[in-house]
Amino acid sequence: MSRFEIPMQVAEQVTQLGQRIRIARIRRGWSVADLASKAGINRNTLTALELGRAGTAVGVCFTVLWALGLDRTLDGIADPDADLHGKALEAARRPARASKPRKASEEYGF
Picture 1 (tube, rainbow, N blue to C red):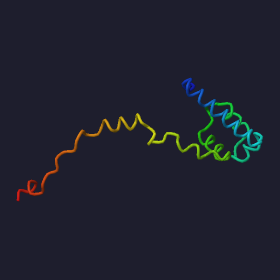
Picture 2 (cartoon, rainbow, N blue to C red):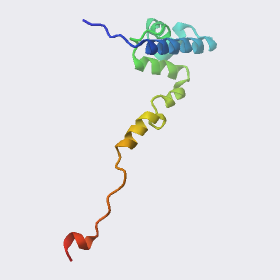
Picture 3 (cartoon, rainbow, N blue to C red):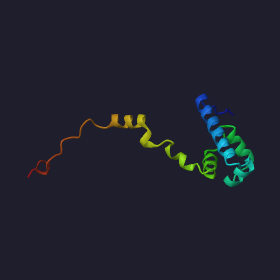
Picture 4 (cartoon, one colour):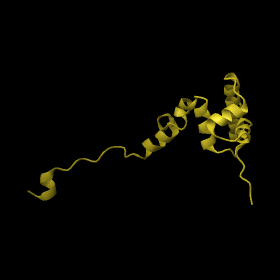
């Protein structure tokens, strides 16, 4: 069975997110057990998330951020309005101009 390998830049971002979650937990004075309990997950799962293990489910990550009160920080993730590249590609596919509307009399011959 082949193992999925993530790009190095993604691995670094996952690690950074784990570190940020750990800092938020420590600032609140919570132990790993405290946050794991609040999030309804196993302590080992939280530790894996904080260590930046890429195999940790995205639902776990969102739940931990919710338990920390940081779920509002997720609003900007993959926001379609902030996707400038996607918006440019979409605009490029649009017709340059709309076709001239036909008059009803031309359409039916009367």
